Amino acid sequence: QVQLRESGPALVTPSHTLSLNCTVSGVTVTTNYLYWNWIRRSPGKGLEWIGDIDYTGNTYYSPSFKSRISISRDTAKNQFSLELTSVTPEDTAIYYCVRVSTGLYDYWGQGTLVTVSS
Image (cartoon, rainbow, N blue to C red; front, side, top):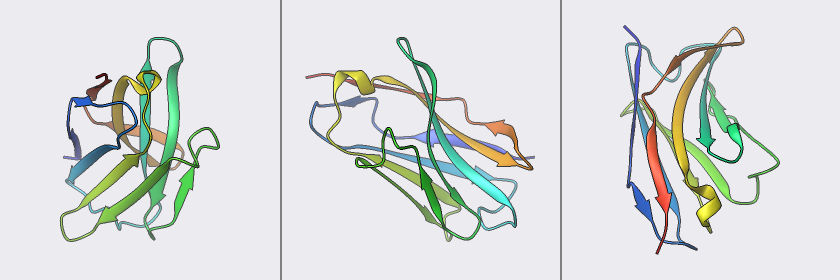
């Protein structure tokens, strides 16, 4: 059974870096044709796609975040990660890690609420 689980700090100070990990089980992050995404939901903007990393390790970022984000993976731990720099209160959101297979967003983590506040 495929499962994704987000982990990371719930509170981040403004101007600092938000770092989240997603631990994947039931499938490897290197399995062909799978894409591993970060998506967030905030009160003011709804669902936003942040970026992804594919099965080869290539990354794709939303232009809205491109200057501030980095997505990477650790194949030994079967994890992928998000770093978002220079955060502001507008980055407060529920962050989800999501698998995409054949165009379907088929497996989601439960989401983790990250609040940016001093």
